Amino acid sequence: MEQVAEEHPAHLAGYQVLGKLGGGGMGGVYLGRRQGPGGFEKLVAIKRVHPHLLQERDFAQMFLDEARIAAQVVHPNVAQVFELREEENEYLLIMEYLHGVTFGQLLSLAGERRIPVDVALEIAARAADGLHGAHCAKDTRGKPLDLVHRDVTPQNIFVTFDGTIKLTDFGVARASGRLVQTDTGFLKGKAAYMGPEQLQGSEIDHRLDIFALGVVLWEALVGRRLFQRQSQAESMMAILADDVTPPSTIHDDIPAEVDAVVRKALARHPDDRYQSAKEMRRALEAIHDGVEAERIAEVVAAFATPARDARDALLATPVELPADERSGVKEKVVPVEPKKAPSRRVGMIALALVVAAALAAALAFGSALENTPAPEETAENTAAAENTAAENTAAEN
Image (cartoon, rainbow, N blue to C red; front, side, top):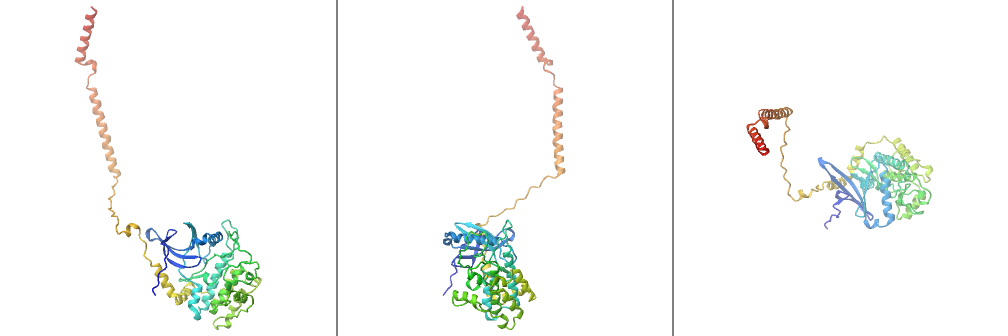
């Protein structure tokens, strides 16, 4: 059966839409491209929510919360949000485009082969660094956001093809000043990554995200899910009651020192966990030497080459030409030879000639006036005067 490509808008927020990167029942994320003079090109990810969902006041405000919160978290290990646009009764979130796959996709592609232990530890350490940046974020007036991500999962940690790690998706984050607050007893996030305090309805803080990152780390090391069960209720019960098997007892290539880090991150009481994501990152760095981005990129290439090929094909979408070029008629531009400005010397000579001509004319005019007799001295005027006098004398007699 022939697969039909999914239709998508040609343009969003002034960007040419190359294709759909992902999405679900709530909306989609699209790859946008904008080009300009001199070979300028900008790629972005555009998050678009289904218009009918925005008609629900709470949902629209949740989307606005995500945009406002994420835009104020600036960290190398957190995906950037550039702007929020409103067009034709819908909101569009313009975000940093990440050329890669989610950590969840990478783990799924690796399967039973698992990713190398050193790479798993490094990805967790960099994700912890991004989490610390989010937890310490402040608003534009310098007030702490008191942010809790609440959805730290392999799907919300991005691994780019060049080995960069980014934390994404603050859609259900808790922060001060939200337009929509979570109702008591209403759970946010994915059940298999929720902390015990959240399931029990207790007060939560940033240490909830440390528990979730501990779950992600265990799954990356072992190669299977930790608390996933047949139903959400069973998954929640496993979080509250089941013992966690130390990773080193499952695979021989995992150092025993890793067990202590995982155990502390997954402590059921928040006071027994790492008290900050920065503290967890330091603990991870203490048990391994760390790896460069190139090492992570090699692992991604080993498992995700088909995914990269598919993304590269999307990026190869032809550039949309302007209307006059699409018609096949191009305006012929005739170069015009610019007029040369007269040199300074030529200008001075011309000015001198003009002045000389003016002086000559003035002198000639003055000479003509001197050689012309005054009106009373001409013969005609003298005769006329004598005739007039004679006529006046005769009249008197």
